[in-house]
Length: 368
Ligand SMILES: *Cc1c(COP(=O)(O)O)cnc(C)c1O
Image 1 (cartoon, rainbow, N blue to C red):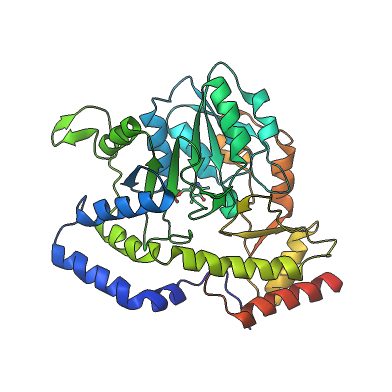
Image 2: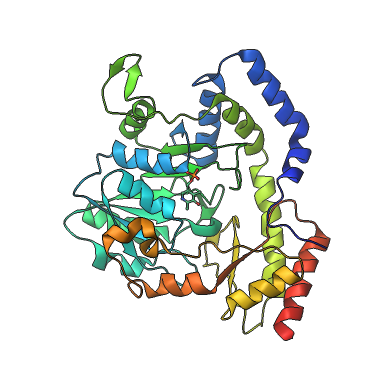
């Protein structure tokens, strides 16, 4: 049995009638940019996250960038980011003209370690970007307390965590503003690119609404040097269908994760992800660690099980940041994670036989 890493076909089959109807509604409307579908999705997604405002934008990277622009964070400013994240979190800061200042993760949860943030704060720090990596919320209470103490904004990178909870509260509504991605592989995935900002701050929401549309509220009256980054009507129509399924699909991911967690208990060579009390992850990825990761991954590939590494190169060692003069050893925890992590197949459409194939193959490999 071959186990793919993601299955794009099964979600379409499950939602075919509703997605096809959304497509026909969109075609019939003959309205393509910033119309009823985007407005309706913004209202529905804001309600889902529990936030007052939602602004649909072109993608997750733009969502984060527009939040920074909306707060006036740019040249000369510093933003604290996790050393262990997808590079987009850093790129948003760089694109705004500010400097990303990395802070190491807690290796058990893979998320930014709140105890290490204070020592990275300088007079130039303007914000902390908390990434809810792999679908699990960052430890938000101490992060928000530190931010309040130092007068900083808390920006959530919620790209991987649609629907996750922290102490009962939804991600996307845990800081001052949150950036969301609807890239097709995300838990709430469009059929193309898409993103959103959620916030309770009416002034920020107003500025981002303008910034995403050339910096204008009224056509040809440009108040800011804005960008063109709008959520498409067609994608919004699809996302409205998929949003109604999100909790169900997240619950199905949680079932796979519970199965994995139990099957891999008491395996000394396989480190399982840790779920702190109060955290309800939505398992965008199920990431384990193995001391001989490359060999382990090869054995899994031989058994027909596809796996991926999220991510093999930490941002500070990426050629994209060569100009920042980071070197190997600067962020040893992120580097160690990059050497040992492995993402197993997980998704709402994995069936029992596939889950069992993964667990029995892994147990066999670990014992051989
Ligand atoms: C996917 C992702 C982004 C960027 O989203 P895009 O829609 O691909 O631009 C940002 N941060 C994290 C953590 C992501 O996983």
